Amino acid sequence: MSELILAGNGPGELRGWVMPIARAARTAAGDGTALTMVLTPSQFATGREAQVVRGWGLFDRVVDVSEAVRIALGLRRLTHAGQSVVLHLGGDLWFSRRLARRLRVPACALAETTLIARRHRGFARIFAASPAVATALVEQGVPTEKIVPTGDPRADMIGRAAPPPAAETAPTLSVLPGSRDRLFAFIAPYFMTVADRLAAQMPAVKVQVIVSEFLSGDVLSTVQRRVAREWPRLAVTWVTGDAASALRSSDLAVTIPGTNTLELAYLAVPFAVVVDLEMLRLAPVEGAAEWLLRVPGLGASLKHVMLERRLRRTSFVALPNARAGRPLVPEWIGRFAPEDLAKRLAELLADRGRRMAIRTGLLATFGGPGGAARAIAESALRLAAAQAPA
Image (cartoon, rainbow, N blue to C red; front, side):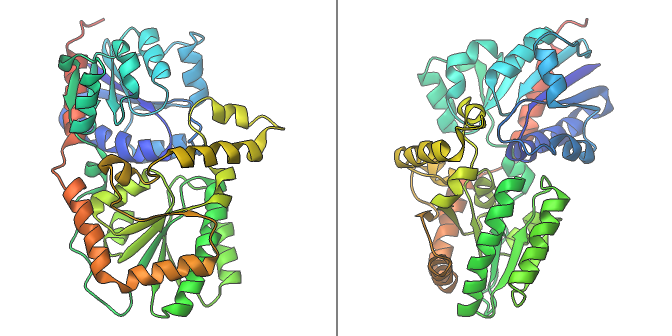
């Protein structure tokens, strides 16, 4: 029996990479392969990942973060099938490689950037999320034979784009306020203020909030009660089920930066990304700096300064724009009065030609064939099967 050990954490990686690859592995190998999910330390995690992943019913076992750390440090053993492989799906490359060494099995990784180039020796196989990444990895010294161009599994998770909604007098605006409790509790009411101002300009507009499964029920209920109390005339649909179908029916979406922007891109839903600078104190920082900034006394002010500097050095905050190297979707960065954002959204909703141009650009860049999840799962399983039985 072989075993596929997936390592990663955080809502974006788990939904966009882990879920479709685990499904593909189940389809490819059936019950002849064990699937283990190891949740690794991540500043982007919500704390509900173990509960959510167990609810998917895809894994034979789920190892939580505290146990994963003990295993990586050699304080605890993880029994596994003799023919096993670790598949890195986001997070710290060092941790995934350390885990593989402890288990004495090979490691492979999915890469959407060239960060792995400096640590490629610890990985037997690297799955490139795009041809551009594959080319860049070779240019940075990664052996060609180690790289497998597969595409991005998110396309398999979210499905393909649907035809655009018919032109109507009652347009639908989808709001994506994030998947972390602290962000959602701040950003959802902020966007509802904007939606209320928008409804004053476009009374027929329909508003739907896409609710992440990684949010806690208490936070969601608190926000829903606040919205009902403060904006009683605003008709809001809270989508807690099939987000993809709801998004396909959208004329426009508004969101914050994150992997959700790629999901919207694969669906070819016209959208705008908002970064109100007041949000920065709530945004997580990549790398060790996030853990340092959680030390009492350092806090939000230093984080605000760091993120403002990063914004000035960053060409694009929306991942589709960054991947394309050009502005496929609008990015609104600054300090905005709700009326200002409402006006911008109203202008986009009224301009079908502009929205269709955004859709066309997204389809041209992200409308290729899927199959990445299956390719990654099957390649990783072959690597596991090639190991000598224990």
